[in-house]
Length: 338
Image (tube, rainbow, N blue to C red; front, side, top):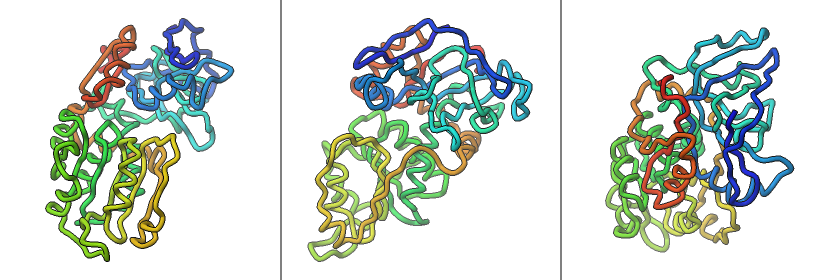
């Protein structure tokens, strides 16, 4: 059986591994599709989650498919169920595709704790779209951490899949004053398609002046600031955090969901004077099912801009690691399930 694995820095291979050997409380899922993301790129560059480990790292944590087998102790799902796989669980810190023993970039995945990890997909949601549930859930939690109130202005920096997931969540919850910021024209168009109020290119627009026009202003001792109440940092650009602290208004909130590996020198004098709230955001809301519910209500198929077969994995990485002028990049393993 094939499995994409990381063997060391910049050393990723499609390996032939043993077929899964499930236990009585496990399930086997025939994978239909699996997304790849910036975390996968980081793992490949570092040679593992935090550098090379004793065993190759199995990749793939955004997967959907069909239940092919269940153990005798499994009652939550049945053979034939269309499912999304939740990579982690509260009782098992090993996350599929991110340091755990299994990964979703494989045709057949052993799933432990299927009562927690497997979520049924509504019949009208294609399984390739269902694979977007994981980044959608990450974006949803970033919105929760930003604590956006009705009527407030909010900005999402970075319109990759997680930023787009945050925008989809905000619009679904009835927020109308959502501004997207991204370098990519494709991603800005996707944000507008989701219902963003505006999508700004920071290379051609003074973002902070434009926010004053879109969201109004509020007073500050050094001059008026945008009245934007909440900011979601999904770009991974260190400068965004510094700019928000410098330009945000009193009482604003910043939710950081992108990975920032390097230390950032922050002016806590401005944090203090503006009484800013800075919160990290990691993984999912309390109910992963909330992402599945949103996929049932809204058609997010346009967010999947590139599809590749498993044998084209290197090409998929090149798109994601190149211009980043893309939405979700998906590896398809069994299109017959869709």
